[in-house]
Image (cartoon, rainbow, N blue to C red; front, side, top):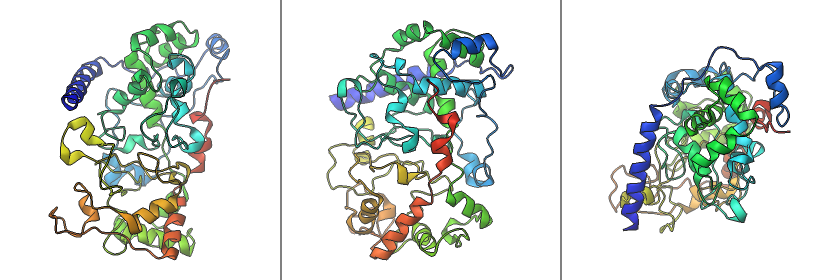
Length: 400
């Protein structure tokens, strides 16, 4: 009975949100400055400049704007990023007023220095309550082509995802109607909403739009990998990735393992594209039995049990602990799993089997790495770190 209730709730939520999406406000793209009088009010609690940061015309490298990546941008036509919309989103993202007791913000579970994830196994919400799952990074959220979010992919768009933690009774515990009234009474929000959407009215739809604009603007493009990828001439065939001139021999060995694999198994198929994302939830053989059913909990389909969203590997060295349940504290533990410990779950992804045929006679594939190869793979994963996105002021806390 509980299973079908969950499915019904999910369907209804999707239906009502789909109706809401038609009512999205058109972001304002004209006047892009805050006046002196507006700044005087805003900067009583914020630290904003007259000219907002540039969120729209970001210089994305060609491996983000061409080829497979060019088709993966999930930004909807009715919610294109604007500088003032993302500025509003930044303020909302860091504002603890979005929680019922003014103690929790979106950034509480998605910290910039932790690559917009949480280094705790489970995040702390209201009154010390803990979330069920580890907080995944939101970096490169823009490039999940299917647009689904959360470990169980229960949100079909980033706009839908943006409002769900706010309403969750463990995380922020706020009813949207109450939140609209609450924020309307804060001096800085009518100004920010007016500048972003041409109306000072605070609505949950506009909140979802602004938060999504800010999150989609958080893109990692300045890692050692990005520089090496450009120096190697933007190779199209990832299975034939050449050595990068800016890599050490150990890092190039790790990259070779990542893209070409060992023992028939490879990292590429679940973490491909230069953004290192994947659009399909997968079972990666963590356990034979899962207490958390993942996507299967939402759909009620047993073939979805143990399937979880594949997060971007960008800045993976900063997002420990790992997996939906935070079971691995280090990257070496993650590598050890894929090398030696993948479990033969009934829904194990076929890329971790020796046959595309999901018959019970197929065998589990493991990387079976030497210690030196494990260390090389960890070294490669560290090259995906982009320090700039972890320190850029336009993604930082705007409150004084």
